[in-house]
Structure formats: C-alpha cells, structure tokens
Length: 333
Image 1 (cartoon, rainbow, N blue to C red):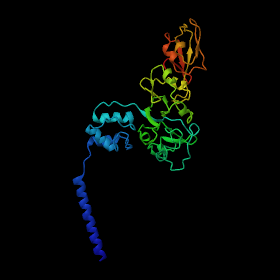
Image 2: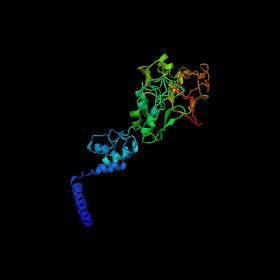
Image 3: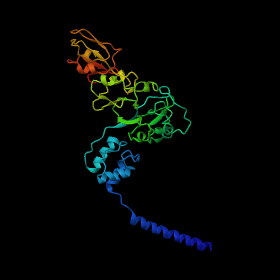
Image 4: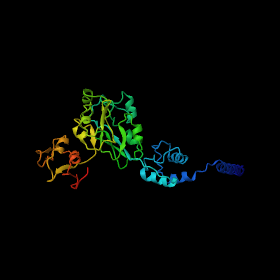
C-alpha cells in the first residue's frame, strides 16, 4: 500500500508539473526587447517617484510612448541619456532636485502644547489635535520620513528632534514629501542655496508666541530683494527660483532667520586702486559696508560685508573683486 501511494503521488506530481509547464509556455507574455534593455539601465529602486508602480511598469510606459524618458529622479541625467541611446532619441534631462526641510522649529525653538506619548509616527500624532507642537504647521519630529526613505538619506537630529537630509544620498524621489503630514518637506533644485524654511500662514504675534524662527510676514525680505524674486502670498514670501540668484540678502535681512543659506562661508568684496569713486557700489549696498567720498577710492568694511556681490555687479569699471571663501579671488559671483 505504501509503494502504491508513493507511485500515485509521484505520477500526480509529474502530471501537474507537465500541465504547469505547458500553461507557462502558452500563457507567457514575452517581454519587449526594448523594455528588457531599459530594465538594465534603470536603477530598479521601484520607488514610484516616476509615477509608476515600479521600474518595469515605467519602462513599458516609455516604450509605449505614455511616459517621458526623463522621469527617473534616482537615475538622473546618466540614466536619461542611456534611455535616449536605447530609443535612438535625444532626451532633455531635468534639473536635479533634493528634499529639504522647510521648518526650523526644533524643541528649543518651538513650544509644545501637550506631551505626546504615542507611537512614533508623524501621521498618527497629527490625528491628535494636529500634533503636539504649538505651531500647527511645523515638523512633528517623530521620524516618519526617516523610515520611509528608501535610500537612507534622512536621519534625526536627536537634540533638535528635526530630520537631517543628506543631499549626497537624496535622489529626489519625493517619497518623504508625500508621506509628511505637515508638508514641511519639499523638493527644490539641488543647486538652490537659499530658501524659506517656514510654512506657517499665520503672522505677527501668533507666530512669535509659538516659534522663535518662524516667519511672521513682516515683508522685509520682499522689499530688500533686488531681483523682485519674492512676493507675499498667504502671509509667506514665495520665492521665484528663476529670478533668485542666491545672493543671500533675504537671509541676512530676515529678523527671525526664517531662511536657510546653504553657503558655509560667503566671499567678501575688495575695492582695488582703479576705483574712481563713482559711488554706485554705495547705492546698492544694503548693509552700509562700503564707505568713501565721491571721486575718491572707496573701501569695504569687511565686518559688515555679507558677500551678496551687488557692488561687484554694478561697478562700471570692474574695480571690485569678490574674495572667495577658500582664499582665492574671482571676477564673477
């Protein structure tokens, strides 16, 4: 009986395997050759940042003409160019973007309304009276963004209880942006050096009572910007990245330092002996860092110079040099 049972089971197993093999061959969907080639160059991160469920779905959409070949933020320019080579077309690469935190209200800067003793998840904490922070729009600091980042590009500052983003690891996939319940994580061009780090639409006293570094809509930055790159909307200065040249004047003028300036050390201006004392540099310097009489050589007060480069740009005879942060000099800012 045992031998008969083994033979029956073996025969049944062989029959089922044969049927599955035949079904696999009959029902198999052949992978398009171009899709297979695209899969070799795509990063296979399956992060969904391109708008598709995974890299294979994205590759299929590219071949069908339903998706642009430059939508993979993880692969960036290199992958986009390889896709172009496979398809035999010229692909315009998009500017590299990274995620930034647009909130500086850590535990020392922003008060808490109550003690939250729940699961360390920003979404769950936000359900309870919009979170424990006194600013209803600020980062809750529970690290949900750290958990969802597939590239380990985010870690928590345990002292401030705010996320820190490693721009070298960040691919700009936008997953953290989508998962943040407060909307304080945003994607901006990687080359962008200055940006506003506050999202609160409140103004004046309401902001000052809850956060030391919150924007209270004073409008000083808007008035100070020489390039008309800022305008007030919903009590917040909105920056036009196309007009902004990252001079840093808004950062320097902001009374609460609500802006972030990623430049570790800015250059400073020096005026050489060819200066004819026209005074144009004095007119544009908003920090009173240049002094001198008309018709005589002017001088820069180094302690007041913020390195915005406005004097360099208006000097008609190029008598001003910007001295670089690393000790070298250059004629363009």
